[in-house]
Image 1 (cartoon, protein in one colour):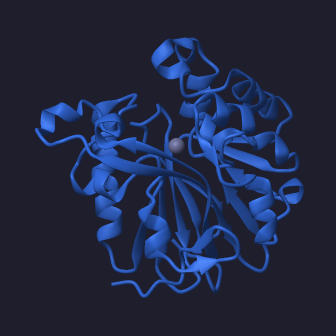
Image 2 (cartoon, helix red, strand yellow; image 1 turned 135 degrees about the horizontal axis):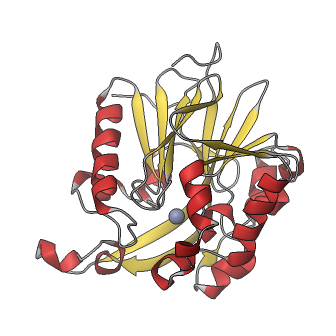
Length: 268
Ligand SMILES: [Zn+2]
């Protein structure tokens, strides 16, 4: 994959948090025979930009979607983007890694954007099985309706396989967590590649210990996604960024607001 000449600045923007436990976040945690332990869960969206372009990856939970589930908002995602100099109303491209409430909750605040989402994800959430309780819990009907409206407006790009969003930014549908969950690969400004796992791996530990997340649409696909992420990040200069791990804020250097810079690590 070739990037722009200098690659992208990549940011994780932390806008929410909660306390939970390993017994709650991992699927059938009791099979591992280890104690249930407290763990934090942070909520992020991501930005890739260079001199010519800005791509926002996911949009965070909306006020009602977060409040309904007892999540703590640390800031308004759109205001936090503004701290980075990103004006949501003018953003030309938004990647939707999957359609859960904490990833598409502010999509309506990006009215000018091409919205890039896997066809499998779009079809699933606008189809009948999304209304069943185990799926419906993690989605907001109004937000799914908005996603459908975006397509109606001709602003949606649906992809079936690896898709180049821009030079040096590629999305890959992997499924597992949701039917069309995608990961995003970004050529980094400092060289190498930032691998945004989104919820294909919520935590570093999820991947390291091979423990799928509590909400998994397709378990075999989730394990396959783990294998793919391990394979991709085994290469030199690849940096894994899980979707909800508080550890991200510790591993990467600070940026304006509650954000960290993901592209300028000295990569081992
Ligand atoms: Zn999520």
